[in-house]
Length: 440
Ligand code: PMP
Image 1 (cartoon, helix red, strand yellow):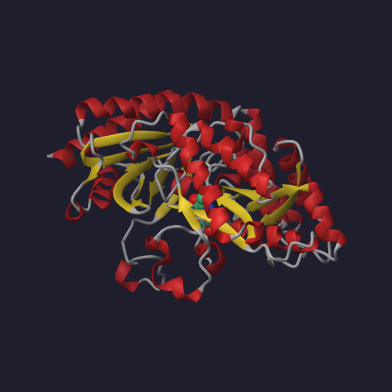
Image 2 (image 1 turned 180 degrees about the vertical axis):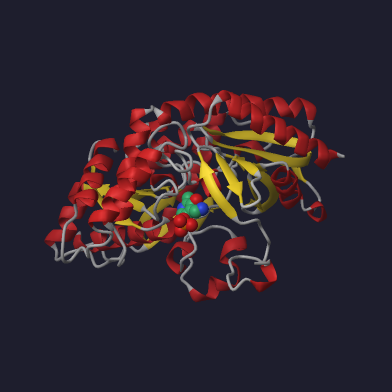
């Protein structure tokens, strides 16, 4: 069927070939052309495509039951997956609420925070401070905390927009501060915002530990993470980590929070957690918070498909597969290899301004001047052009022309966490060829 005849629509009419099947880090279209999945879809397919263990576990569950409504039954897959998730979390984060995607996870985290505050006699607290730039989802609640006009667009009048502070964009700052000082400077913006808003109105601070779609793998200086956590504790503000993209091993640890020894009050996960096998996400919260909610009459929230046994069976098999093959360890090791290979491209292409990220959440950015990080002319449409040049050559990468208050062409190179060194070689070969064509 041609694109013109299609009854389906997403963001655009962009025609793409029909997907036939996937295997490991590769995808094949109906014409038999092979693509290396250099972005895991949208940072989703962490353990690669068509994993036999996961498919077998899903098929076994399908033969028993694909749905059991949570008010009518508990199910083993959801109970077992919750226990498994709790065992992988920092101490104290041991209560799990399943959802079907990242936006739902963020909504759930915010509603949980708010309802908990009410049970604590803190009904005056309702503001969720988030950052600019940031991406937290497409639903109205998650858009309210998303810091990007590109996404909030015409919808802004339709929801209550929450207060924002600047996310650290250290590589853009041309000042004489050390990394540590710069991290503290940005963290102090949180304190200033809390004071400006009125501390007894602020419920939570929400952040992506490593920026994804919004910033292209932007990592803050270490001092930022610790100071932000201290400030939240000082004001009794809940710290919510949106690990929808970073969670489930993407940065080389199960949670990105582990890199800094941070225990947030609430964590939201999705993407790599269901790893493309099922629409699945999880919100993990402190046990005492959840107990307080349940004691006060229950959590006023729910999604029909939340925690369905088929999705949970898939999630459990994904985590088992990750453990069985030390896939997170591989993400850390291969992340180092890929990052240094990408950094090497900077010698050859002066228009690559920056390579950044953690584990296998990596990005490079194209600029017209590396010293000033001046962006490429918009008319070049570089974010689309380079993606297309790579796609034609059988490499899938992910790009966005957004850097919060700035515009910029960044490209996420985030293959499945099972990637091998020779496969990184394949990615680099195609990417170099595409960059040569772009430069020509
Ligand atoms: N939070 C973050 C950090 C994300 O990267 C995304 C998706 N890009 C979301 C939330 C929303 O997830 P979903 O698209 O599954 O609703």
